[in-house]
Length: 44
View 1 (cartoon, rainbow, N blue to C red):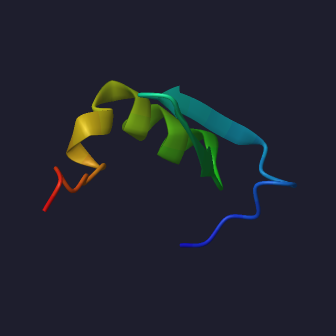
View 2 (tube, rainbow, N blue to C red; view 1 turned 120 degrees about the horizontal axis):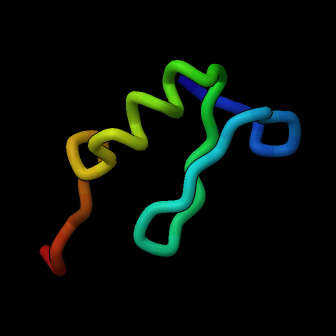
View 3 (cartoon, helix red, strand yellow; view 1 turned 90 degrees about the vertical axis):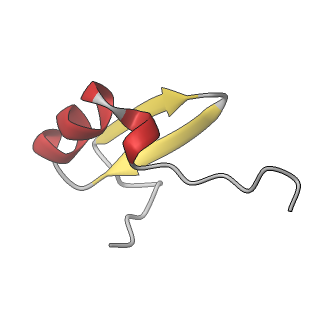
């Protein structure tokens, strides 16, 4: 889902990045286990 960061009511910081959410429930789910939802390319 795309969320407009200018109007998003919910956001979290993780590893120096800001993530925006459409609802408090989505933010809470992310905050409990952010690594589960973030995929980073490790130099490959």
